Image 1 (cartoon, rainbow, N blue to C red):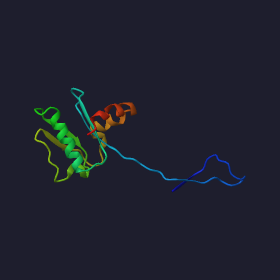
Image 2: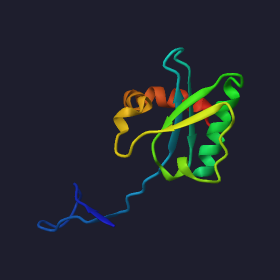
Image 3: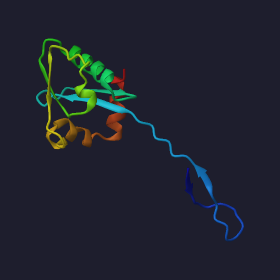
Image 4: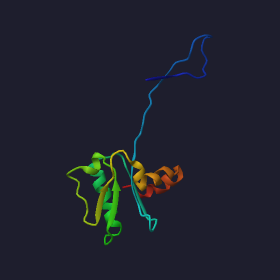
Length: 125
């Protein structure tokens, strides 16, 4: 519980105390961006785990099945799970630890505005 003070009618000298519970809702955005054509795939998931990553890879694989896709990923546990099945037309390249600046998608995600994020929600599975 956090105590938040604000305006309220109280006896003079008494600080109003209002119970407040901060609730965080998390959503995870998986994305792939083609620097040549500008094509992109953004998918929103309620959690970030190996199963969600595998579903994303299948979705990406189905976008253009005859095309080989090279995907740069960080060393997150979801990306390196042994049970994850990577489709044959996708190759994963793992970036060195502590170097998000090497992943081009990180730069794109920083530039996504709220409007564009809402616009891309049609990719939601």
